[in-house]
Length: 344
Image (tube, rainbow, N blue to C red; front, side, top):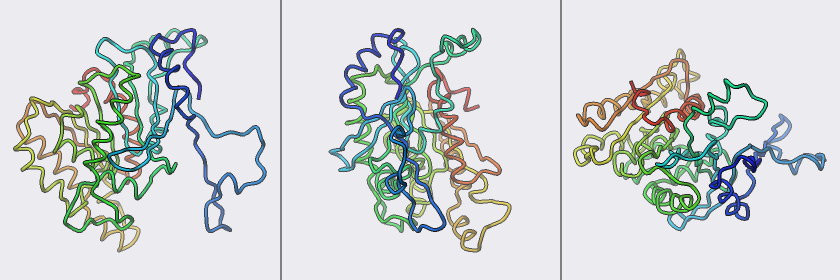
């Protein structure tokens, strides 16, 4: 991946590059090619022969490294989206993006980039006025954009109820995963980047959205902004939603102010038509729209001035649409000096 322009990089970037070049792996995007005649996707090795000059796809101003967690026992692939200019006196706002190998590419179309010499004065002014921020996207070393079992384990709280998960039997690791984020990964990156301690944003989709809301309602001291896209509140018989009123009684958001964006696609519960009776039964049982709306309503009615929340139900959007919708828009939410206006 292309390093920042050495002639224009700030001393912070020079120091960052010298410290990270030996340890960071170039981030490659490997595509799988499927064909009706094959039962399994074709890997690059199965396609023959590819030109020797071909290489994994790369993203500019980005770095990646793998890290083993002592808290979770899992191996993660971390993608770093470099800021486009030096930090302010308070440090960079930081966007922590779950399902990083899936969410980070969508963020590429929205994150600020430095102006180039051949660009117009208007573009330079626009870029110069955009707030700078750091993106930390957390994926898995498996290289899978959505690692079904790894994320099911990391993003869900323990439950004694039926999980409702038809794809994975591994759950309940939200607490050690939060420790990995805040006690392992954050201190590591703080050695290289000045972080604004009052502007950490957590972005999650589906199970990641569930993790974001579970963190908000149990340990809100670690993040100040939350974007939960299509949160899987159905998990564990809607446990996180059911426990929210009682948890709010024990939380004082004047000590930990929070801004929350909660989004869901209306087709996740109320499509124009159902693909099959089985799909209808599943969507009606999961109540994605009603649960997300109810979670936002409970937060809004908590009567805490330092807890701000906005709910968005998007017509003609299904579950995976919300990953793309949120990943593109969360940049402004995370990097704005004050995102309260975005919640009105």
